[in-house]
Structures are given as C-alpha cells and as structure tokens.
Image 1 (cartoon, rainbow, N blue to C red):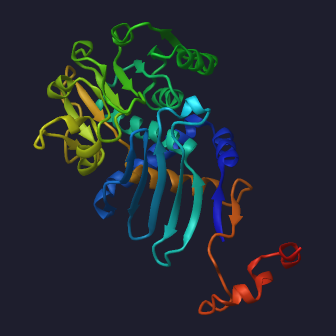
Image 2: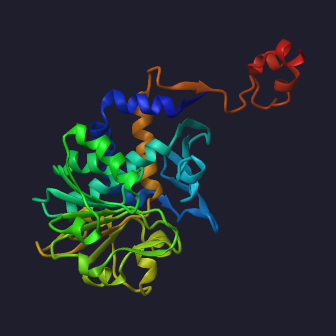
Length: 350
C-alpha cells in the first residue's frame, strides 16, 4: 500500500506540530539535501504554458528516492473562487519503482517555499535583520512571515498589496500571532527601513513590483513571485547592483528574474554557499537577491519530512494505488478475482 496524506491531514499535522516548527524541520531537510546536491539527478521542470496559466511537473531523484510534484499557477483562479496554485506530489522507492508516499502539496508547497526562503536569508541577509517588507499579501505571505520570524527573528512587517483585501487578510491572520504590522499605500513606503524585502506577486507578465530606486544598500531581496517564462517582479537594474543567488541555474535562466539578463550574467547556486564553496553576504552594504523559482529538491525534502513526521499515525491513510496481485506475473488474476483486489463484487454487480 501507498501512504497518503490529504489536505485535512496535512493541516492537522502542521497544527499538531506548529507551523513554525514544521518550517524549521523542512528547512533542516532542505539544508541536508543542498549539502548533498551533487548526488541528485536534476532537470528543469517540464511546463505546459497557456495564456492564462501554467501546469508543471517537477521531478528529481537520488539513489534512494524519486520525487515529483504536479503544480499549476493560474493567477485568475481566485476570480473563480479557487486557489491560484494547486499541487500534489509523490515519493517512490528507487529500488523497486513503487510509490511509497503521496501527498497534497498546495499547503506543503507554501510551507516548503517559506522554509527555502529562510535557508537563503539565513546566509544572505544581515544577521541583525528585524524588519521585512512584503510586496504582495497573497496565499504565501503568512508562511513567509512565520518562517522568517522562526529562523531570523523577524517580527516587524511592512506590507503593500494592490488588493486591500489581501492586506486585511494578512493583518487579521498575523496580528493575533504577535507580529507588528504596518500597512502601506505605496511600495516605497513599505520598503523604507526594511532589512529584507519579499516580493510575491501573481501577475504573469514582466512586472516591476520593486524599482531600483526602492532598494537601499544592505538589503536582502527574497524574490519568489517570478517563476515562469515571461513573469518577473524586479527592475533589472537591481540585479546589476546585487549579488544574485539561485536554486538551480539551468532552470532559473528560463524562469527567474535572471531571464531578463544576458546568458553570462553571474549567479551563484545556493548549495555552494551551504557547503562553503562560495560566499554568501560578504559586506554589510551588499545587496543580495535570492531569485527563487521553486525547485524539485525542496519538494523532495518537504515530502520526506512529512512522510517521516506522520509515519505510524492516523494522519496517514493506506491507498490502493498500485496493482499488487498475489502472483506478480499474473496481473489478469485481479480481473478474474476482484475480491482479492479489494473490490466489492456484489456492489459492483448491483
């Protein structure tokens, strides 16, 4: 049987252990996997683009586990009353090829994205950082804020969004958790005095959510909204001033902020910083950019952590996903003897 964690049980796990602790667990898993970067088989994700969105498949494997995530991004979905992003993922045993774990990943992706941001910010932001500007207050915003507080001690937020509802929603969710929040009517107002700027907008276009004139020396920019071809958030002049870090360069050249830059524009993959093969922040006045598009390694890390943390509990459900005849050479027997395949013949014939 394959173990499954659905939406309700994913929410129950996060509530049971606490979102802050789950982000910390997944961040530790990501760091562990980044340290082992060279053992993974990596490819850019496969994408099917349309005028209204994108559907992507994100695979990765090492010598023990194969993982994939299915995910979409459709910015107009909220107008239809559904999430912009929906996702699910799986882990398979490389030795047998059989899936061992399946999970919803809409919630889990939000958590792992926040965890990935903290892994980068811990090495790229100034250690004394305490104020974060948030440009975009959508579904990802609360997870980012809680992750940054858990790992970096960020407790003061300055928030701007073109949608007042998004800002009100964020304030309603985070103020009871002890955050000090300033709502702002302009981007320049939000970034004034910020140590970290997180950009997370949904429009599928070359937008400029953050201008070069908004960026002061010493800032760390956590750019997580540009995640497909034709979709960016930053003024290119920011990148020219900054030291830029990415997850998987081959993928980020296609999808990230650096898609706007020449092919030889210098970037550093984050795993090199984690393994001390490259510097992160060097000087206090450096401007650093984490050009994050989301990469399959972080999905594998998150799925593995979830699988292990929920093992042996009622948060996991056995699902009959893979045919398993008593005689592995006799698949046809499952049709001849459906009771043995878990079917209720009487119900089926009724």
